[in-house]
Length: 358
Image 1 (cartoon, rainbow, N blue to C red):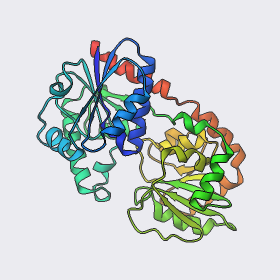
Image 2: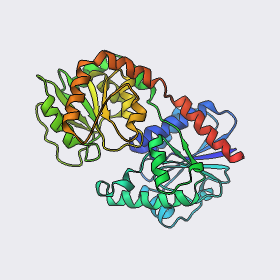
Image 3: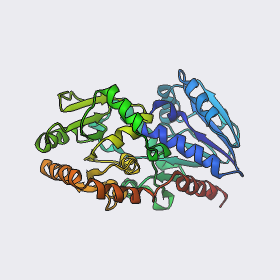
């Protein structure tokens, strides 16, 4: 079969970027039968796509078209014109990105990582909300198979009226770099960011990530020089103090060492489609405190300290428990994360592509 995959999202350095890179890399490694066309739309970041093409091997051809995200949204989500075949030729399967849903006569597959923009419109930039809302309409009408990373997200799709027969649950996994060990990088990053002594770490900022309650909980649990290190760009002002450090965006290659240096990952999010930072911390040997709701329970299993994210005292107790039981939690986390791998994810996705033959 000829299979086209939209990889436009890899240029943005997000969780979806990492998902796309790992999925494509592992599919090409696992599949020596089908022919792949890797398609990317961008106006200014074609060099990033070319760099990715040069880093992978397998039976694929590549296509870059000068269509920026805003224009892609108009053409494919709003107008729903320009079939993807006009750009990549005849294909048997088309796996679209999470940003646009072009029309196609092929067997259509897409991945929905979560429904956050639709569920939380007030927490989402209006343009992003409108794009996801329009795309989701076409997904419900036209897509043959919808890949989701968790049963929690599957249940959400069912509540929106999506037919159960079209949904496939395929978990994600941490990249191999999170299993690597080395003290030198930790030392260098401590110096780079000025983080010395013990700290707990949190990934993602904003109302949905529950940053306000997290900071309140940290103020109550703080011991000695223990610091809270926040990774991500704040949507609201976060007070940067001696004990609270906001690092902003951190390159993905630096995350493993920051996890390893931390005493725990504190991830009391109010909603996730999956919760990949939980597995990243597990792979790094770092204890995890996370929410007892949404997909986070699925991902963490019994290896994390689960808390009620709406109760500050519960978060306080969770952090204290993780700090006391670091060694035991680290072992549980490493056992839990071994249930997930990109090799499994790729093979399960290939099985979805094969459904086009039925």
